[in-house]
Length: 83
Image (cartoon, rainbow, N blue to C red; front, top):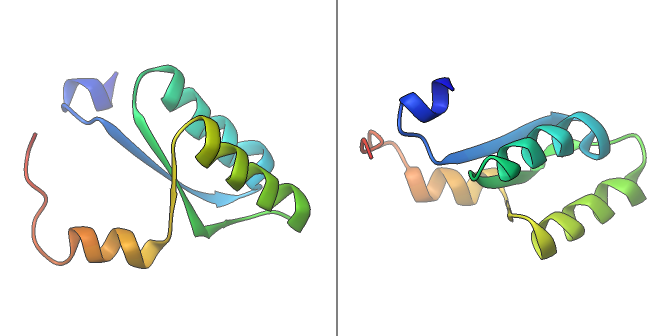
């Protein structure tokens, strides 16, 4: 509700347990109509095979996978424009 009232349209997910908490949060956002991005170098899992499978599946079916450097280069040091 807060994100909607602020006019936000994108969710960027980071954290541990790519195959559990991170994926669940990103998927919830996707179900609610947000552009949902997983940051590949800011997520992890104890099981590397699961981690990589989630990233491949996410990019192929639900949203986007990017790196933190690509996101920072895109946004840079400039203030974000209000949408």
